[in-house]
Length: 220
Image 1: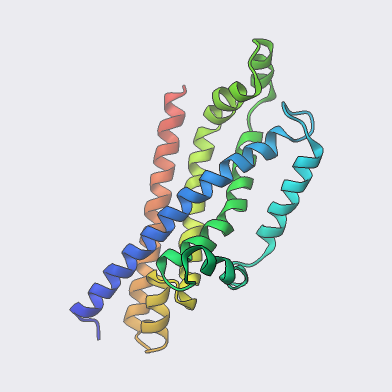
Image 2: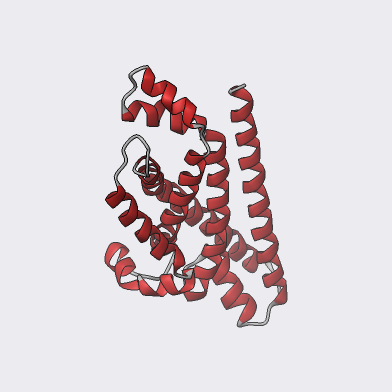
């Protein structure tokens, strides 16, 4: 039965999902953005070419991306417990969500920066720009529309990951759907959680598209 008590549960679970996804997205870009930049500038022929650094970081990113999230979630339980004191709950879920998203973000950033024409970089070099100036004044600003879409893609992926984390007590809509919908055979709760997740994804994608379009228009 879907009553006021269950509505409170749904609202709380929705807030928990938004909270853990927002924090995880932010933290994943704090670490993933610099990693993606390093992968680009250390590649062959780029401004800070370093094959060893590029290959080592690239291998680490590939290994982490190859592990399915549900397995990764279980593998790092000891680390999660070490960082936050427990592996159950919304705060605990932020740890695996962030770590799983960092390599994904790094590759998105790498792809965005590689789309920039080399001529722009050459022009900056010819004017005496150093590596940091090229990164901060050329690479990141030019890639901003693509980077903005990348944030939306990352957020949407983390919404899905958060639902999987809910199966092992991670909180949010995933936990609500599993414990109250699946185990108690409450189909109404299952459908409500699915609809809310769809709405969240649509809102994030619309916001990302809108911001990317505005940034592109300002640069024209």
